Amino acid sequence: MPEPRALRSCAVSPAGRVVRAIAAVLVGAFALSMTGQPWCAIPAGICATLLAIGAITGWCPTDLLRTPQAETVEQNTLGFTDARQHIDIT
Image (cartoon, rainbow, N blue to C red; front, top):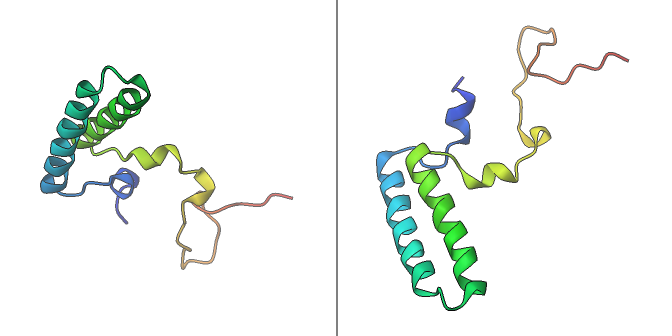
C-alpha cells in the first residue's frame, strides 16, 4: 500500500512539478501586472502562491477541501477490524 503522503500529492512526476512552477510564474506575473486592480490581483496572487507551494512540496491545494470521511479505506481480508476502518463500539 502506498504511503498516505504519496496518495495526496498531485504532481507525481518531476515534469508535473515543473509545469506547476511555470504556471505559478505566469499567474504571479499576471497578478503583478494587475496591481492597479486588487479585485483581480489578490486572487491571482493567492493562486500563484498555492501553485508554487505545490510545485515545491508536491502538496495538493485541493487537500484543503478534503474531509477525513472522504478518504476511502480498503477492507482487510483477515476478518477483524483494524485502525484503518471505522470501529463502532456501541
